[in-house]
Image (cartoon, rainbow, N blue to C red):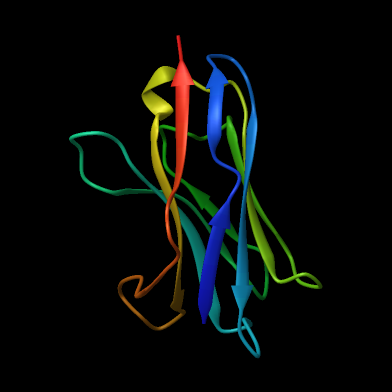
Amino acid sequence: VQLQASGGGLVQAGGSLRLSCAASARTLSLYVLAWFRQAPGKEREILASIRWSVQTTKYADSVKGRFTVSRDSTKKMVYLQMNNLKPEDTGVYYCAAKVLSATSYDVWGQGTLVTVSS
């Protein structure tokens, strides 16, 4: 699997942004795709994940109700819709993938920078 994230940018607090992640693989049915964020001076944290085959999703408490992860199986794309953005959402966002049985994410796309101004 190879991943390529895009869609970052500068947005005002309260605004919205949608990140996209293109996944190249013969099949993604055995994978979980996720979005991580690394804020300045902080460790990388997982924000949301989606199990490709059944679209089961999970969210970190910090983004629950504001962010939505989804996927388009035809285009092999994963999205992160981010609403009501806050300055603390600023950071580099990464998409990542792992097979269902794996304990950690081992495929990473390049990051895309999101900056939320107050």
